[in-house]
Image (cartoon, rainbow, N blue to C red):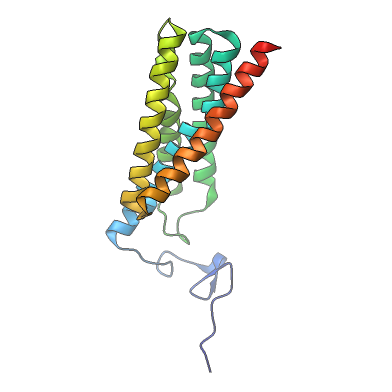
Amino acid sequence: MTAPQPRPGTTQGLPQANVTPESAPSHTDDQSFILQKIQPALLGLMDGSVSTLAPIFATAGLTGKPLDAFYVGLAASVGAGISMGLAEALSDDGVVSGRGHPTVRGIITGIATILGGMLHTLPFLLPDLRTALMLAYIVVLIELILISFIKYRYMRSPLVQTVLQVVVGGAVVFGVGVWLGRLGAAG
């Protein structure tokens, strides 16, 4: 006879409502660091880097004004940072998942989201649109490669697969932003 398996929604066979810090899964220091710091930061960097691409590049294409794209990027980055930070902080209490204090995770995710969105937004402070766009393209590429490396390094994902996933995802969103900017500017 086999041992009973924990039901979905339980930890070690205990209903989630009865899980205490003592009965929650334990992790090594490295695992805890990854779950509590790296994973929320990576989540934020990925979201900030990718989710702000379409609005920024669409605005640049629509208005032809770098400062307009900067303010849209700033608004998108801060808005996404607040949203992602709250979502991470409210996702669980950290006891069942072992992911640490939810407020700390939320702050890490929120700040990383803003950072991920602002890095490629900053070039739009330059007055020349062409220069701002070229610099922003380079920054986006560096961001996506950095995200891929962090995912490879800490999440132990295969490097080539990780780079392809992150770069293809970013390229799709970037392409949509450029397309929408051109579509709006043309019509």
